[in-house]
Image (cartoon, rainbow, N blue to C red; front, top):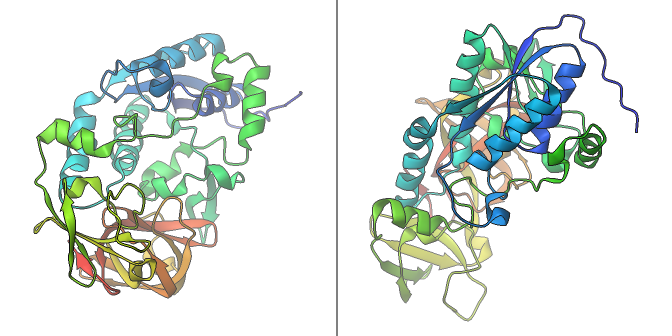
Length: 372
């Protein structure tokens, strides 16, 4: 397989965020081939983990990953630096995650990690080195009405724009995303062709500090037992006792632990009363939500009156209108959406172009409205 990288007309110094995976490794190779001065930097974020290698490879940012990143940099002949950001990660990612779960929300720690650490602290590191920042995220950089922003990648199965909605405009001006027009199978084949030993390394799917997917266990280990409470049907009748609101998320059907004679979903979580409400799929529907704080990749003055709004990483974006009120953005969907979980993000697009978004703070209508 022959693959020729076009030479950069204006080669620059670029800091590449090296996760130890195949994506960031190929991103570094592409930039070096283009003629840039490339520096690899890894952030130590995750706590040490003594679980199996298979489990550890389902996460990211561990000591194992840093070893892989160093070896890739040695292979590419570029300098490698490691930064221990575990304390910062705990303060801005882990602790808020635990607090939100105990409050009955469903947080996405990868948002804070991207916004505050990778595209915050690491960007400042690159800036101090008079360098641009590059990552292995699957997204494209585009011009939208004269503003540099992100757009969904060619490989839509790998789209990561939802997680990047809070990237600051200054960062976007100094960012490189070499993988936006690449397909993952081709990228793995390219990595093998150029001799990168991580070419077949599994993708990280779980949160780095929840390698087995058990969020509740992590919350309990960090803060102690969570109060038990009552599980109710939407019609008010009691169903059973539950072991803590941190075990549930809106829209959940599997793992509820009870049978109610019908297909039931978690439709509401009230952390103050410790009541988890079950109901039908229809009870999950709503039309109006609010989110804050609003982070804009594109100034709202340039947003169309109707946008596409995505409320979960794996949901399809749906048409909605929007208004700003008292610092929060309100979205009204043209057709009902479902399973709105507070703590997730509402991210707005114009077609494939990212406009901005915020954390969901209110489900304003439907069977069980709730705000925080």
